[in-house]
Amino acid sequence: MEPGFDFGMIGIGVMGSNLLLNMADHGFAVIGFDLKQERADKLEAAAKKGQVVKGTTRVEEMVASLKKPRKIMMLVPAGKPVDSVIENLLPHLEKDDIVIDGGNSHYKDTIQRINYLQNKGIHFFGMGVSGGELGARLGPSMMPGGDKEAYQYLKPILEAIAAKADGEPCVAYMGNNAAGHYVKMVHNGIEYAMMQMISEVYDLLHRGGGLTNQALHSIFKKWNEGQLHSYLIEITAEVFKTQDDETEDPSDFLIDHILDQAGSKGTGKWTSQDAMDLPVAIPTIDMAVAMRDLSVYKEQRVRAAKLYNSSVNKIEITQNDLGHLENALAFCFAIAYAQGLSMLAKASDELNMNIPLPDVIKVWKAGCIIRSALLGNFTEAFRKDPKLPNLLLDDEIAELLKNREESIRQVLEIGIKSKIPMAGMMSALSYYDAYLSDRMPTNLIQAQRDFFGAHTYQRIDKKGVFHTEWYVEGE
Ligand code: 6PG
Image (cartoon, rainbow, N blue to C red; front, side):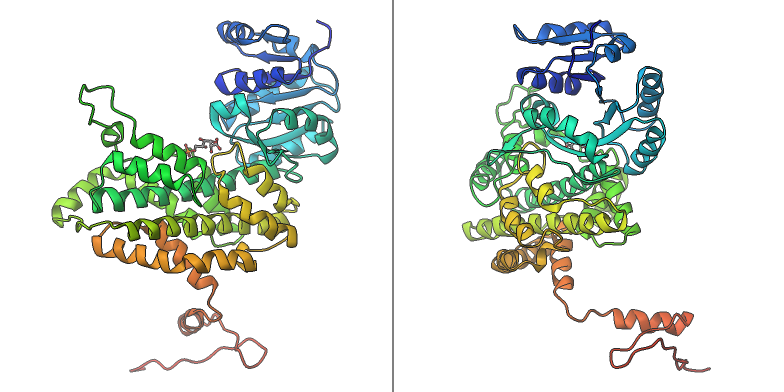
């Protein structure tokens, strides 16, 4: 076959096909490889008249039909499948070809793959792709990282198919090495935190306040029109109005039939693990991971509920409370973004990835799961200081948070009184309170460390490292 295709895809399930069809909509000639003939046929059948879309079950055919430098993306499950695809591809590739891993791979695996392929003259890109199946078709948010020069070849295609926010494409070069997968990992950490805190508000309104699904739908729908405007609030409103089609009863909603055990594929956990290695504090993301983990212990929770005869204290939710909840959630979302972005700021330096924070905001503004109106407030903060170590240090963000501080305290009081666990939101407020403390109680921790382990401490009034022979009663 003549090399006339612009882009090749390995793995043409729904995501892979949708990305290719999106490219075809923008005039690119695309080819997809899959071991399953029916997938190759389905891809071709989905093309519109005049578009150049081909499916094949022969990887060598796909590679041979691509223009050079070849641009090949793989969308296969993270882990071993990525390595085996690379090995199958390698014999057919040439120097300067570009291979993109568009899955949720661990960034450390991506670093190894970059190094491995660099020796063979191949450019390997780790690229976070967010927005699910629909996003892939209509405009995803994409976070590519790797060799900057090679990115120039990808840029026109990726910019054409990306979601657009304020007329700008939601794709940008995220930095060298595995920066793309790193940014996507942190995106997912923030996603976990936002989802956790939305679920806490749901719990307070539903189990605590006794609100119906219809009422919840209206509240979230209204919130989505204001400061909380975001993809996650939007889909939450939709969830509450979805009826259960297993029953005839129109008042039976699907949400009430879903088992309360959260799944996870690991990206939230990786964010927490890596934050602790850096180290950087992202307690709200940690708590979101922990709460998903706790949810899995359903049997123990049922036993404990019986043992403690526990029940929530019913509360009445007023219009005023709803206003506080809306503000509190906006406060907590901002804190979750602040934690994730502070992690990126630190990792950018520590891991030499050179992540452009203003571009991260741009890329997250549309197409991805954590897109929200709040992100609009951060553009200016990073324009003023592209290396801002923490959003909380920006004066406009400070105003945004201060204006909502009273609300988060009110909401948590209600949570505590009604016995609704609000661990994510509490962690957000505690992070805020700690970050704003010019003196933390860690002087005591230093004293204790020195007491039992002679770990030494520093003083505030003179330089040096000190140790004290602490008095032990009775010795
Ligand atoms: C996205 C999502 C996507 C995936 C999550 C789910 O940006 O489109 O983040 O990548 O839905 O990885 O993660 P869990 O299964 O761990 O919740």
